[in-house]
Image (cartoon, rainbow, N blue to C red; front, top):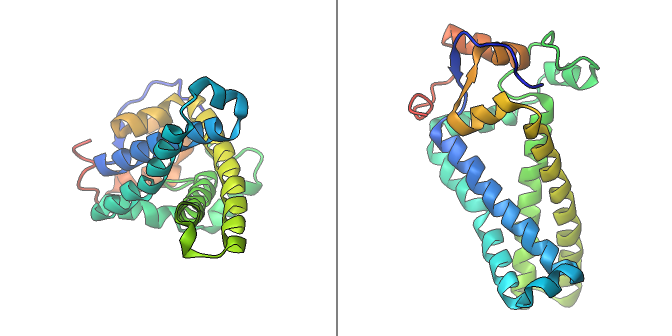
Length: 217
């Protein structure tokens, strides 16, 4: 839901660490997707010509993908976001079943059920892609049958991740206030009450886990 109503005040949503991790993973993921397209689509590969260079960029971007996620664990605010993403509540099931889930009547926490599912799928896919990528890049580690299985899994998970990323971008393009939250760290109180009412009340009451870098966002 795009925010069109004027906001009376802003609420801190994401700290610097969370935003840095998000944008770092986004850039690396897009590099992986684009280079994979050039590697697997022959008509695109012809445009580049230097397949070896594309392979190198793809491999190193893939190996770097988990790094921002791991470094972010040093931030208390980032760890709190991960705990929230990993906690599926009864309200989340209600939100998924509702046809009017975006009208604000269901009090949602900092992340809605869709965001939690997306986060879980993305995290699991990164683990699988990283592991299968290692087996493909270092063929001497396992036998031929394992390498073939790794290639099969890598290709299909890559396709799934590509669809997830496109869906995530489409959702973000339809919500300017959500984009502002990830860009500046703050969102309007009106948007927060409409989209994440339980979290907005938590912040207003001062009960949310302190984010040391959110206040500097």
